[in-house]
Image 1 (cartoon, rainbow, N blue to C red):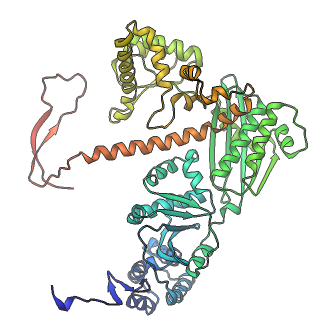
Image 2 (cartoon, rainbow, N blue to C red; image 1 turned 90 degrees about the vertical axis):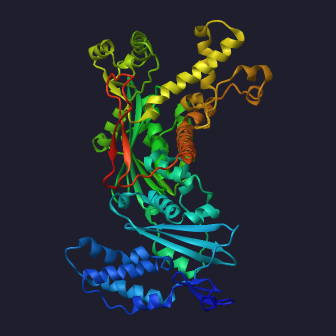
Image 3 (cartoon, helix red, strand yellow; image 1 turned 30 degrees about the horizontal axis):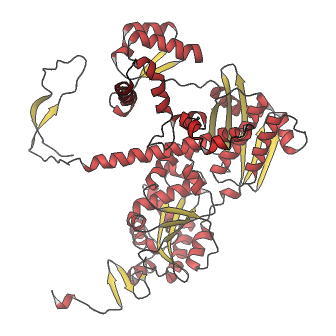
Length: 584
């Protein structure tokens, strides 16, 4: 140990470029002075030097992305240097802000950390805070939105900020309980991500952390007050326009929602109803779906446009509701309406609602099929009895690449009915293996049943399928029966033992059943999120057993032969030794 390099009992010192004191972590004064004394840049190289010095102090600057946005715009142009008045103003304001940089606190093990989120049109930000006698800043994070990121809606920007923070500040998220302080419905949106596919991916990434959501209270610390008030999200207070429509045909019923953001960005939602509904019932469904979509994006003021006269007048109170079913729809709409500050339903001509009308017609024709029979002749019989006779002739059928699905006879039979054959990719084994896994589970249960009671497997098959449909799956968390019908069926053991729902059965359960149907989309969305997280855990568990192997220049390697067509089993699975000449 070199005594000249050791320092004990110091109340102040420089560590990793920061000044560590009893008060907390302070910015290095030499870095601050270098930025304050810097003259306005005269070329692109000096702008790069400026942005680099700002980045070095980014954890202390609550609005770093906003301060540096004019400078990054210069770098994006690259071929032409232009320092304008906007850059001059931002440069001077930044120098003034550097005179009062906050002192950052150190997190305490066992105490939760608070997070404040913010978003603007071009940037998002985050502030880490610990709560002692008062809130103390721990870390500031900023990010300039690029390309598709700038087109995210308000709540998506906040969710993206949280995911970005979990990626860059992962140690904080792993070691502490994170409390997100926000007045937006961010927590509810992340648990119900049916409005956007990217939210499902973000929810999966955040599911491994202990994150809680609480409403934001009054902020007393000046640095945080500047961060929130000057970089706040104003979208919830803006008026959102929602166009809704419905379509009822012999093929089924569908509803559509077309939502316009304050920046005229469009969000389309098309839903097929799994039951026959009248035009008025479908119109009410579309109005409720429109409010649900608005709630998911955090809207506060909504105006709904519908080309149907009756629901619009009934919800406004001009017409009386005499139909009992429509009265239930109106009650559900009024209950959902309480989540908003302002909701207006307005009648518009059909010509002004054309886009939503086309989406509704499309939704009323959507259908899906699954094929499971292994013999080509039985495949044709199954398609005829269980698909065509029940749902009509489909446009296409999706299957794996087994011989019974690619035979000449089945292909000609499908072409005769105008049915297109689509196959899952060989390079995506998860899709190809779904049917095989289902068949393996059926065979396992059949074998157990036949070993105990004997008999014919054909007679036992319906009971086995029923048991599989009524068994909760670990990945989804609910039974397949619940995901399809929105509720659980009564099993024989409940009759003999008399479960709670058998003892408290109410014959008039129409309203409860309608509520279950309204909530089925939320149940399915949660199952998707849970299943995605379950697959992620399985992937991580599998990767732990994988032994990494690295190749270097000069190593001799073999090339694996991929089977193409009918390849003999005696053919070598590897070919030639090859020499690695370059590592990319």
